Length: 238
Image (cartoon, rainbow, N blue to C red; front, side, top):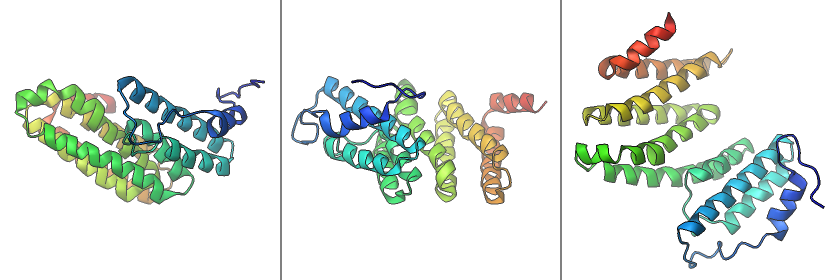
């Protein structure tokens, strides 16, 4: 029987049984199987479904089952068949939430390494060519780095600070190439994140210090390159 869904829309008992025992994965676990565009979309969706299940299990306090599902996802949907992408960030976060820091960081590192290679390629283009590819640069690369930065804001202050510095460096580079809108988008996300982090830090003085430093660096860049963002934040202060 299908059972009844929980308030969050995930019937963990039924979904766990389906994902762990009943589903057939159609060769996704075999790196030699060719995956066309449709299959790759399905592969990503399967990772999304695992992430949904795992998050629901963690929220229920069923950490052992969540870890089992995580390990299963890496067996039936391995990076050798399709490299980890932005859809795998929730899997990495679940590892971090469960205290499996090395495993979470390993997924993140694989995602980041591919993005850095992508950006190195894009950054060798002419400014006009970069402008023509600004959407891909932002949504499939820098935007993913922002998501990873947001993750480390919660789980690792040192990595968060390093990622903020990297994003600010990328922003400065794109300002220098005349891609102000792209740079503004990234810089605003970093700035907004640091502001939220500072005011949510409570009595955590270490977190406050990290966020204050991130804000200072962000506003230095804003003052140097972006009058429109400066006006935006000045209006917010009034």
